[in-house]
Amino acid sequence: MNGGWAVANSLLGHERGEDAATNPILFRAELERIVALARERGRDRDPVIRDRLAWCYTKVETMRFLGYRILTQYLREGELGPEASISKLFWGTWHRDLGNLGVDLLGAQAMIADAAPYDLSREQRLFLFSRADTIYGGSNEIQRNVLGERVLGLPREPA
Image (cartoon, rainbow, N blue to C red; front, side, top):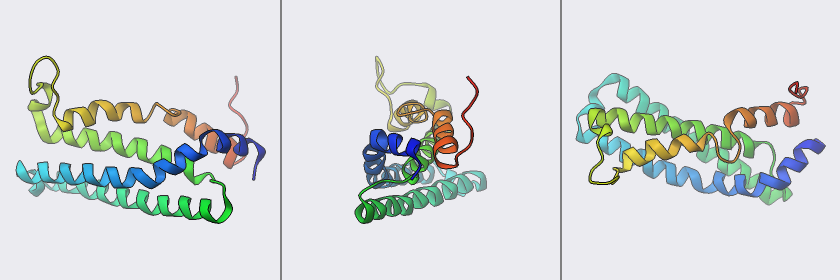
C-alpha cells in the first residue's frame, strides 16, 4: 500500500468504513420516501422523473455493494483501502442529487416553510443538509485529489 494512502487510511478509514455500511440503509429509506412523494403527486408517470428515480435506485444499490466490498476487505485484512474514499465521493454527490429531486417534486411548495419560524419538510431538510455532504469530511475536490495522488500515484497539485 502506498505510504501516503496509509496516512489517510489511518485518519479517515474507520469513519469511511462505517459510512459505507450504514449510509446505503439510510439512503434507501430516503429514496423510498422520495418515490412515495412522486407517486403521491402523480409525478411517477413523468418519464424524466422516472429516469431520475431509476438513476437514484441504481446508485443506492451500487453503494450497498461497494459497502459490502469495503467491509469484506476490512474483515479479511484489518484495513480499509481506497474504496472507502471512493464511497465518500460517490455518496456525497448522490445524496445532493436526491435532495435536488425531492425539491423538484415539491415544486414551488419547496420555497415555503411548513410553519414559523423554520419548520421544514423532510424534502426541504434533505435538500439543504445534503449540500454539506459534498463538503464535510473533505470536499469532493479534495477527495478527488486524495484519490489521484495517493491511490493512482498522480503528481501533487502545484501549490
